[in-house]
Amino acid sequence: MTIAAPDAPRRQHRPARRVHPAWWVAAVSFTALVGAAAFRATPSVFIEPLHREFGWSHGTISAAIAVNILLYGLFSPFASALQERYGIRRVVAGALALIAAGSGVTVFMTASWQLVLCWGLIVGVGTGSMAMAFVATITNRWFIARRGLVSGILTAGSAAGQLVFLPLVGLLVEGPGWRAATVLVSLTALAMVPLVLLVVRDRPEDAGLRPYGAGPDYVTPAPPRSGAVRRTLRSLWEASGSRAFWLLAGTFAICGASTNGLVGAHFVPAAHDHGMPLTAAASLLAVIGFVDLVGTIFSGWLTDRFDPRRLLAVYYALRGLSLLALPTLFAGDVRPPMLFFIVFYGLDWVATVPPTIALCREHFGEDGAVVFGWVLASHQLGAALIAWAAGFVRDVTGDYDPAWFTAGALCALAAVMSLAVRRPAAPAAAAG
Image (cartoon, rainbow, N blue to C red):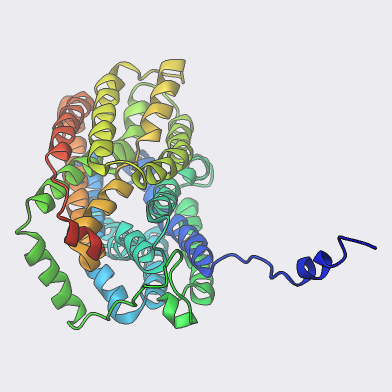
């Protein structure tokens, strides 16, 4: 008599475990964010080539970068509401097409206003539609469990996409020229469109599913009753009465000023001022992008387990210390202290996003994604201001040192502001 035989059929008919479709949506969203962010890798590498070819000042080129950064933030809350109204697939596919068009047209420009139009307006609106509010929308719709982890993964994709292209862009700029680099960026964004159309669904319910981690008592949220623009403005009006909103907006403005507004836009030309080759400086920024993948995903994991306010305070304090030390680390070649800065700073590059999304969700419930869009607008406002100001300071003083010191001091202020955010009452937290 065989004892194991009766168990064999049960093992054969046991259903195979399948990956929840929410993870496929997250994977394609990650890829699309990388493609959308590819353009945002180019401005810092293009500053010197455009200055040499057209004679435009650092301030003029930085103004175009500032317009792009500002529109990226200002359009984000409206894009989040448009995704609610017209669907993620349509809005994201259209955004990628805009990025491809705006980037591609720059190869024909001959005047600085055309730079502002292409880099600033067209690409700014396109990237704004693929901003981190898109991360909040995907996370809130498709996930109940692992929201912090998923927001960390998607945020890392957006940030890493800005940086991992830098070595290739730098090689193209020093070889065929900046026009070849911008064509590559255009084609990269365009290649993401069919992938988004094929895989991404607007809501789990569209595929007969429930969000990942939804329990038996899960109730599908009612669709928003107001129009996209009306809902966006209403969310801002209601959130503006909250102390938490202004603290989060203020800290995130400093976050933008201390990352893509300053380091993202001006690290390469600052290193070049000290004799470092463009490709070497661009490669260092790319390392920040790779390290950021680890830091931001780990930050998402921590956000699921610890007080997000305390996480933010630690992140801003450490970032401020690293920026205060940066001016002493520049040299004509890459030395160990600079490599330590790159790894240390890279772990903190956008680690602030998962805790900030979590706090928006806790305080503002179903409107959390739209409110985060407004918080992101403040992030980009801070980034735009310092992107322009740092270029102006460089023109006036001949170096970037005052900008690094200012950003470091602001990060210390952001750490204090983060601790001042109060935890929401239990009903508001449950609503998210």
